[in-house]
Figure: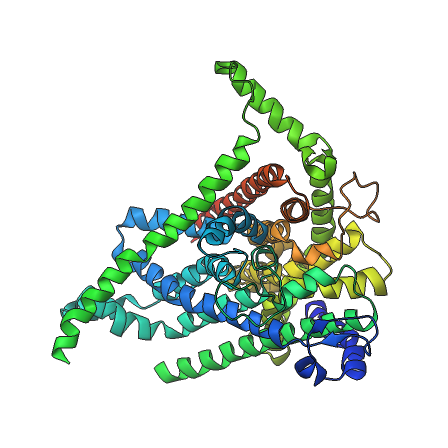
Amino acid sequence: MIAGSVVVVIGAFVVGESIPALTHIGGSRFMTDESWHPAADASFGQFNLLPILIGTVLSSFAAISVAAPLGILSAAFCQFYAPLRVARWYRLMIELMAGVPSVVFGLWGLVVLVPIIARIHPPGQSLFTGIVILTLMILPTVALLSDAALASVPRSYLQGAAALGLSRATTTLSVVIPAARSGLVTAVLLGLVRAIGETMAVVMVCGNVVRVPSGPFDPIRTLTATIALEMGYARGDHRASLFFCGMILLFLVTLLVTTMEIVNRRLRHGTT
Amino acid sequence: MARRESWFPHLFDTCVWLAPVPIAGLFLWLLGDLVIRGGGAFWPVDTEVTGIRSVIVIAEQIIHFLTASPVRAGRGGGIGPILVSTGLILTVCMFVALPIGLGTAILLSEFLAEQNRFGRLVRRSLDVLAGVPSIVFGLFGNAFFCRFLGLRFSIAAGGLTLACMVLPLLIRSAEEGFRAVPESQRQAAAALGFSRWSTVFRIIIPQASLGIVVGLILGIGRAVAETAALIFTSGYVDRMPRSLGDSGRSLSIHIYDLSMNVPGGNENAYASALVLVVSLVVINVSARKLAASFLHREVSHT
């Protein structure tokens, strides 16, 4: 009961607090204003969220498009390729990484990665750095979940494939991965959810300039970073517009979780 | 087609063998960096100290770091008050989340059928709750606990916000623990004329206690690692908290603040990060040990 109501209360509060933003500023100004210069009074500020939205989408989708194949490959490595002992150590390492808090990733990114990238192309705090850190952060999620998905493929499938004389690669590609696809889709989508919602690491390495990036080495700002940076001093309509950002995030996550359920249901019906 | 199949599997093989290399490399780099720089803070400055003396010096440095107050905005000194605040936030969080989580898990596993529509709705909302970004929890906590309930920036508000966050984790693992209790035991209890509640309290909860403990530990792990949800609920103040109504800085916020806002704070940020990661590893290992003994016990039952 209470758990269900917590969801409702969270939704209600985030939406409720963002209503002033929608009524005073109006939905369209979030797209058409000249820039992001929020102010407590709607008539003085500029509220263009578009570059921030683009920053979020670019960084998280780029991260998942690197992390998804790598994570699935590493799961295949763990399940079918590596010797048992190597697989066990490798899995242990990934589980360890999955538990490292995001501030620590951010700290490492800021102290180690940013100076290296700044040498290639200043200023260093950029979309590219953000993508690298995000990829590293969601890789354990994707790898562990795909690992579990691959492990749940019935043994008889593998034995059948072996009996047919299929090579390891062919077995993995055309028997195991199709059989485990519903789990793999879940893994990738959950990774994406994490990438979109990630805050601290992104704040620390992305540069936080509100502009549409013209290249991978330009700084960006994400929705989560905007909330984290401006919540401390935001008043009035500015505060409301930050809750509006939260509402967008909530909407995106709900959308992804629902997609996940629909895809899962359809795939499960397809295989049985 | 035949030609494509001749090289494609080989390419795939190569990819699978190569994929772990950069992953492992980057991860080990990160961990090594953390251990070397974080550990460097405790290394004796005086090079003449050797042997058993150096061990004592290192131990002294670690104890000093864990108990002293931060000085010069955290560049020097230790993290004593911050550890206390973190502990208090966790206590509040678990004190609230545990009863609610257990109650919901009992409801889901004992009182509702698996296909019940209400149960599915609760589970669905838990899935969404688990995916909600932590910064949104922070926003909600700020609006609800800090403003609406008038708790201001305080340890209580931070703990309550975290409680909302760890609920899904807690409920899921407790529910699994309850479901693992064999049906025959419930039937036996019913045959003895136990009421539903005494069945739950006398039979189910004792049997599922390890599952609950594992969920609790995992929840603590998630709460310790959290930063974004706490910045706008428990606040930034790094003094020793006097009550739950005081603002207190958690360890993760301390790391963030040192690396972002305090020039020259990196050394202590790394040392704090090492403390954080080591405690998380301890938490996770103990959860795994408990879970393993839980499975073992189940096997020996049958």
